Length: 515
Ligand code: PNW
Image (cartoon, rainbow, N blue to C red; front, top):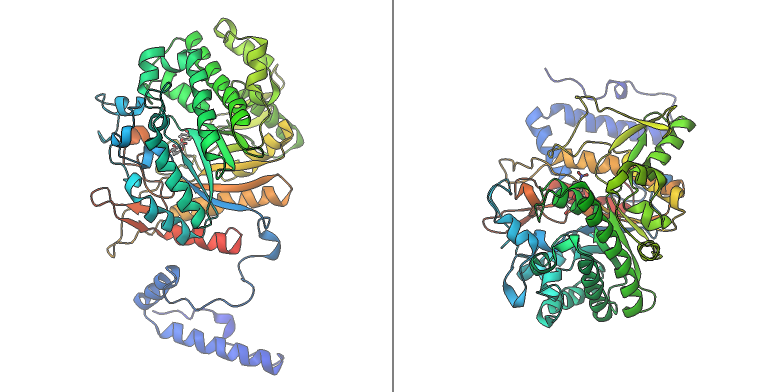
């Protein structure tokens, strides 16, 4: 049986003004038409509207975007990728091998036994990929520079052909009005530094990174105005050198791991100084960190304060030392005899002044309550029913997008924050018509963005947002099994196709509001 769509429209409202009556009549006619349509027809209409195929052009104000729910007018919408995950062409134009090339070839490391020899073949298709960005309407693109393209051995002789790729990419972006944000290190350490120096276990690797940073800054800051130093120090340290499930696949003893952590933080600080010394004045820089995110379980003033204290403590090895110039007492007590060895000068370098903080926000790490203990807080266990997306680690906590920048801005008096990554994997099975209707990704993004808008409306200084990722790519140890893109990549043909979420993001950017 077909039910009338809106019963309340059936009764004529005799008290209404003539113009209103006319509107009600025409609405009623519309409803009659809808009632005559079969379910199948309705599904078709809904589908085509969703894809924007036959939707009538919207005129005037958008009914769904309340006037006060927009982002600041200068808000920078972007997408993000990283070199190793998309470029391919790993032996072309003099690129040296990286620790990920080596690691991906070790048996049992990558879920689908894949590697990034070809990945998305972005190295050859970058011009088309810039057009994909343009179709979304993004104003900024965060990409990473492959250190082993620029210095195939990590240090010593540079390879100008390697840098040329980025010169061409920058020109293409700028010609298309897309602002480049470059990351200097997204985990692709030149293998030679691992072999010759022991990689991040050596202080010399931190110095080599600074030399590379200075070299790049000198040559690219005529066009790149924003540089991220290192992507997610904490992940490369813990997963790469503690758990051994990222390159270089090491499981170091706790003190050695502490030292690796210290060298990575030091590399960030040395790079900040090298960029300032060699780049154009006015170049803005900062790290891109996956800050340990602490959400107050309920928003009592005590729990909010406890979540701030927890944020400072849990980020003791990275953000706290970078922004305060000291390892916190809690961090050192926790590390005990395994604390890193360092000098006062090291701490000064690590805390060299930055211009912005990049935050990669995907999930939450802790729900925090105030507690009567030495630390002043407790972390609640996650109930087994806590929801997650396609990747099991990716729990769904939209409010992380509010609390992460709010805590950071408050704790460290920050003036500028970028959400350097946010996005999700989803099953993304193409429908019979070949399209990917990734309504789960849209649900995830919409809710995170609503919380980001909540933050900006309260004055949290978030200047922009980079969605991870432009297209499906090599998802590290998950190989090609987990897809994070707005564009689906067929890894046989390398053809890119927009998912429904691409339309969602384009509309979000157009409205400057979580659409
Ligand atoms: C980030 N977590 O990794 C990386 O920067 C990207 O290269 C990666 O493709 C993307 O997020 C998706 O995984 C993360 O457990 C991996 O919180 C794990 C976590 C965070 C970030």
